[in-house]
Length: 500
Image 1 (cartoon, helix red, strand yellow):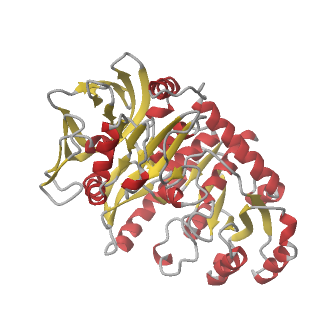
Image 2: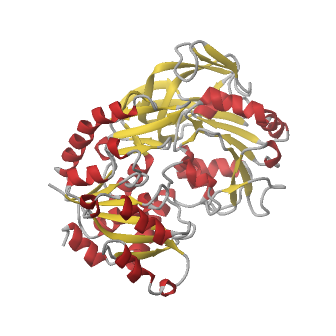
Image 3: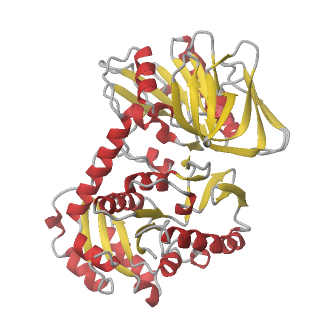
């Protein structure tokens, strides 16, 4: 069985996911067959495995850093928040729903599935890097914990506790977490990692020694610097609200002098916003997330992204006047694009006869920019796909959606899906208008196709040369791994985990 290590956090967004990514790449470079594991993820940022299973985007990224193929055993439970409840994706497929009234009972049922997934994974790999969720010291939730120290016990995994010094109060967060743990739980914590430090670690003075004395003798095994402009997909949309995030927000008076300006509507239930990371990585491309009409400015293109609650977010846009702002931007010459839920919003009508997203029988007018209509259906589509554009170019990506969109009179097909989850297919895969200035598709990751991305940007009068998205991603994994390995006591961590 695999030898494992768990990364826990003093709170959400302490940096567990990125550090797990770094550990996966470090171990892969040292020749280990390593896999990530997170028992339960809560995020609308999801991806699809080659078999067509849905799982958290963070674990897909960690698998890519580990140089292995993603599998749903790496994230057996994915909770996708929507309308006061969460959809449960179990072993890659929709299982049901969880809310405040049934979450304890549901989690007990999921525990057997989580352990079975880990055991299968541990039988196939040398090393497992486990990631916790939130904090192990959330005493009101501990009884239903299937992802933190209970999972570490099942995996016989020593744990490292990560604290975010950039947020402030890191010593109190680390020591306070230990104080709230039971004595047997404290024994599982073998070291601290202080994350996102800006400056010289010597500025911490005697703080690390005093922390060890006050926190039950647990040593600090690394002080990791704040790594600027790291282009690795984020776990969830919380990243878009951080002032240090790499994507811009707010208004602009016009496109940058040497490039173009793209406005992405920051929907309340935005999903899969890493679709746009390859765009923001291009020189001379400004990517902004817009929440109010006055922030729209005069972009070259407006993008409506995916969402877990299409009808709700469409109503939110209308209430804020963003629908009118989008139509005005189009009249001023901006291109308008919709991905997944955004594609559905561009159409004439959206209907929910079965109550998949809203009350049964709900319907709404779309933005009317594409002659298509969408009906939500019970069966969720999750596939890796190959897609042939109307001009013959073949793209790759993935689908995650519960709607079926039909082209009406006047719509032109954007292209055809020619392969789904490894099987031949033949189905219209999106729509465009006659001017090729409004288009939509269910194809996530479309902008990761280098040739397509460059041609589309040049269609908007971009003058850049373009980057290789895959090579850039691999370089970022290595940059992250280099920084983390230098900043931690890797030999001691490896001995603690039994890797050396």
